[in-house]
Figure 1 (spheres, rainbow, N blue to C red):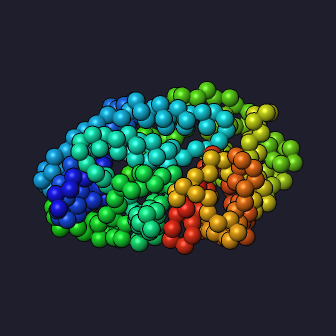
Figure 2 (spheres, helix red, strand yellow; figure 1 turned 45 degrees about the vertical axis):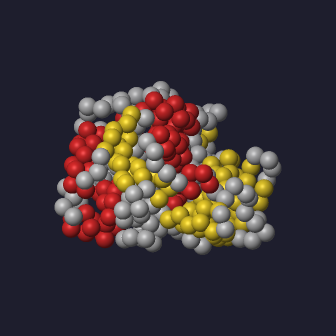
Figure 3 (tube, rainbow, N blue to C red; figure 1 turned 90 degrees about the vertical axis):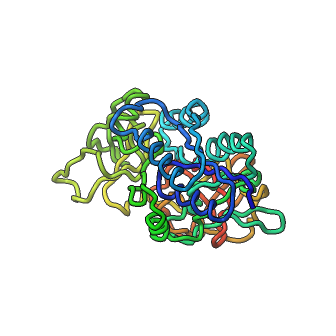
Length: 357
């Protein structure tokens, strides 16, 4: 075969096995380690140096060349600046989705093409299928690891050059393959959280970039029950870290963030997981992106999820106006969060998604 393919290697087991499988299939594989974040590079939470060493070790074992490329400027310009603007406005963005669209499948793809590659590959758990000249994004076989949600902003040009070799493999099998072939990171813990924050406390990180503006915590009825440290540091549905104790008048149920009153700098909180203020049947979406390039048939119903770790929920979609798309769910959705993404599916096919308004 000898077709050149560039694999994004993070130092983790998924991208390592991706490179291994493609090498076994006869591709001319080049590994590419992307450095997307330079701040705090020497503290306990940043593992980029360790990750690079792991990626180099795996590349040596597999027998492929590997290159390290710094995309931190592109990341700050295209992803992190958006991340801060959204938090400052009281919304909760998902930077990993933007990172895929702007860095991994744009800056990285451009670099791979410059290296003479026709395609790129990553360790994402998803699948691509071509049907009558249109490229479809499909869920992974391993439902517990499916990452199509994070890839829903990819377009036809990007999908046509993307390969996801782990799409039809279980995660347990991926680790078994890594161990069988002597990859040094076969038991390495999966990374969690936002890519540039790592395992560090989120509020501590955000506090470096956004000012704190303390204010009141109030119930929907107007009762003051506590103080918040700044609306940017909370997200809808949040339970931990509110610092509200029980009172003689309260039910004893846990408190949740139910809304933000930006004009008055107030955090709206309620008691009970199923409080009506946390439930909604309808939502509006900005910047709706259809992977196929054309709007789906809105005369029929689809399934969608308003956050990553969530079951697909039946819904109807309509065009509210030129900028907004309206979603109406059969069952109430919990803690729908402005700034997060709603992603729509037709069975196993990911059709696209947009930003919750």
